[in-house]
Length: 632
Image: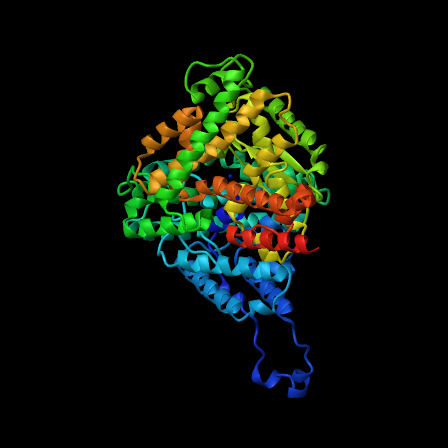
């Protein structure tokens, strides 16, 4: 719950953007200026057209400096620059300074547009971009963790969950296309870039360390362990080489000798460039451990930590609520949802113990978990993909518009699973070269009792993240809108989608599945408590783990991974519940105002087809839609 960036903000937070000199418009030399009469005949753009042109320039500026993001989106060289598939972006001081300059230019550009002169969807785009650029400007005032051209980012460049040590292999293995010789040459060229990228990353994390800004020690250990796992094999057996070799087998234009030569070059590059780069980064992280703290919360950074968390909460949907108010909201929601779960448990004859204990006891029953074997894990993936097909058969009754892209459930790569969350979604690229992917962590199948899997599928795939991201990308929005990510919108939608699946009847004959749905919502309510506990109330990592395990009944290993995630991504865990509450609030408002004219399919299209946005912008948009419907 990639951020993409799983989602995109998570990715952007880990990508430094360099080479900004290529971003600006080219100005003609004085002796090549067109005549005044020709200038006078140029068409005058409307405000909507000015905004559209500006948004296109901004998208190109970002993508030309971030080849990783361009690859993730699958855009062409006409937008991202010639040969971008052979390059990687910048991760050092100079790159981040240029990102700050880019954000400042974006702010100047958006302020030059007259919002009152805009109409229709253009006003929504204006509001979204202005919010994104202003949020980034506030984030970029903190001199650590990199910078962002739009929206917000994590305070740390490298953790157990983020950083080029994880991002780049994922990019190469799942997103870099291999259809011809040039693609293969580009792949090897990117492998050669690892050395520079990791040296620049070391520059950033050691510079942050000099300011006494380091991730918690367990986050550094997690990153170090993932590096060790990824580089444990012989270079020729590393996934960067093995997957490369397997994909080349499908390139018919290559001879066997060509394939063998390319694979040998990739293996040599991993041995002489990639592995040494990983070793240097690991050593730098080991050095930082001497000053790192076991304290999990960003409060340990003093005034900067408190200010960063206030911005993070606001960015992820809290609006004007304080840390204390979000904490109390979480406690209230935990109590409400626990009561609903208790009623189901009692109806099933389960009356002894806490809600969490009784829920965990159901998962411990014989037959409720897949064996922790490769064969059973493969069977589990087949079952999850069947769940996608089952709910898609009913989706037309609840959504006017269905995604054109397919979605698949796949296993998180073994080398990532120790530090990865339970599951996340990767959107299909714009060029349609692969489907959307719901990635699930199968390190230990004990983390996934069978009655919990439906809800996970509905959240990560259908009608959750896959619907939201795919419909957004097919809605004809400016490219930069598809590049932006708002966790409070996307994760709020995915949690709301779990509720919609229940309303669709997916749990009609499955009380244990419905119980798991409520437990999933309880889990997100507990996040409000734990995130504010860690970062505002100065809870320890252990205190947060004990609270969450006690409330949710999840395994301690699973809860530990979650809490460690919240520690390095302040505020984001709150986005789920805050977003869901807002969408339900707006739905209730529309139902009350429109009465029999309310159509749930139309409401869902109204929310999804204009892309992700901050909650205040969504509020204004739905309110305007209600007024329009009332006047129709």
